[in-house]
Length: 197
Image (cartoon, rainbow, N blue to C red; front, side):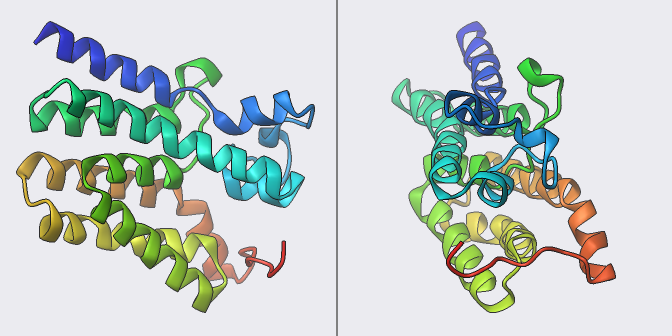
């Protein structure tokens, strides 16, 4: 039990590594928290610094949700511990210990955790995001729609109670983190995805 608690804490610490900040620093770019939306995530990095930095940020954010879950699965941890590991990494991204608790909105890290739980649940989120983004041209609308549907996907694909509960919590947190985007959508000031960017 003690080792499981330690691994969940490690998952939180892994999630606390802000990929956007680290990637931009490594590429000698500005701090993404100081420009654009101020969000240290792949979408803001794309707007500020282009595709290469954004793809590296996206990869880092997905991996920090995926790898702790895969480690716990490899160690044959109980489903509850695996689910909590994914949640811990996700919360670490939202409220990173190493970056003053000022984190991103969690879309990519949630995808990583879902892929670790069951690749189909992660794929369902990704496909939903892509379809809604293609139609609406809003990253935030795509994320919110996918988040709303994720607990249902998990219930259908991986109906174990710990995963359904944890994905519900993560989806609710992701929606909460997008509250400023929802306000912008209501005002008509939300930034659209620009083709070819």
